[in-house]
Each structure stands twice: as C-alpha cells, then as structure tokens.
Length: 118
Image (tube, rainbow, N blue to C red):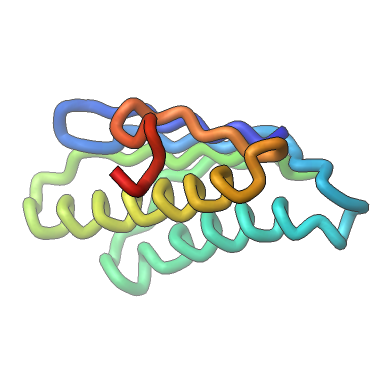
C-alpha cells in the first residue's frame, strides 16, 4: 500500500511524505502507482519553472517507494502562497486517487480527513 502523510504547520503544509508500493498490478502495469507518481513528480517538476525555486526532495535511492517533499515557509508571501497552492493541489489529487483506489492508497491529512469534497 502507498501511504501519503501530510504534516502541517501554522503556515501551511510543512511536508508531504509518500512511501510504499501499490502492488495493484504487475510492475509496469500498475495504474495506481502510475497515478501517484505522475501527480507527485508532475507537481515537483513544475515548481522550479513556475516559481524559480528548487524543491527540497528526498527519494529512495533504489527501487522507489519513498518520496519526501519538505516545504519551508518562504519570506516572499506571494511565492509562499503559490508554493502552498501547488502542495495543496498535490494532496487533493492524491486524495482523489485514494478515494478511487482505497485498497492501494491511504492519505493521512488532518485538513482533508473527510475527503477533498469538504
């Protein structure tokens, strides 16, 4: 199972940690894993071109299964707000996958505990 843990601070999302494997299908055919990967890497790859900052990311060196995005509070309020919007977009998209494929993806986030449709 893929577990997504969202840690929040008073300023917004502090960290998004994704770990595990969906194991919904054979390697290379797992649409759940593909969805989680596409969402997370799509957002992370957009940060530098859109915001001009390099995201603080840690990954498993081999075989995948772990991604941590540490999101600091930024002094520039506009830049901070845009980074938080991208982070919230990632979380809401991952919640949508978890709602559809709950046997394979779990999202822990106090803000969206009842789902993204709140």
